[in-house]
Length: 112
Length: 113
Image (tube, rainbow over the protein chains, first blue to last red):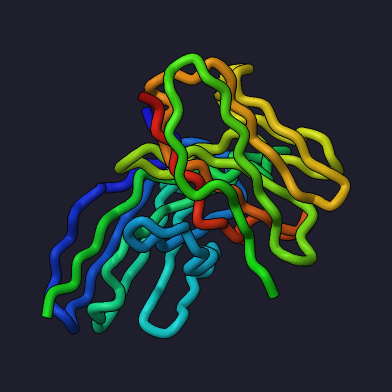
């Protein structure tokens, strides 16, 4: 079983749509959680951290359910520029906070 | 403010050869991590360097080794290259206290023939 699992997609949505990505992780000792964004043939960049209380940054909302070991990302009012791969990321566990475990990524294509 | 820089950007090697990849971290960062990203996959952690020492290591064989210099720059060395080593090698820098936010370089794309 992969340590971080994501549906690779692709998710093809029209502009203005709301889209949700999900991710599960296997290590209950993981302490920190993130979503990174990676454009085609570019490096990953931090999109947002994910907190237990949930957090929002503009059109983006992230949620964490520690009991289910489940992370989500919601994008509202999708823009063409949101087309990218979204990587779910968790720390390896207590004492390994420097090691980030990346999921395979979920590809989003926003169409006009 | 220069971000993370990596060199070379692209290179082609043959099986059995050795390769050295280089990374300069973002200004003010003291920690460097290396990741391998195969096509269609997420980055996989190779190792992390802090204070010139390997602090953590992922599930990679000893053919993968590294070094960090006093100016915080780093090298990744891979010996006895295999076809399966073909990938994008990403360097990421951070400060020791904020390991969740990594700043990645554009990567070195290695092709092994």
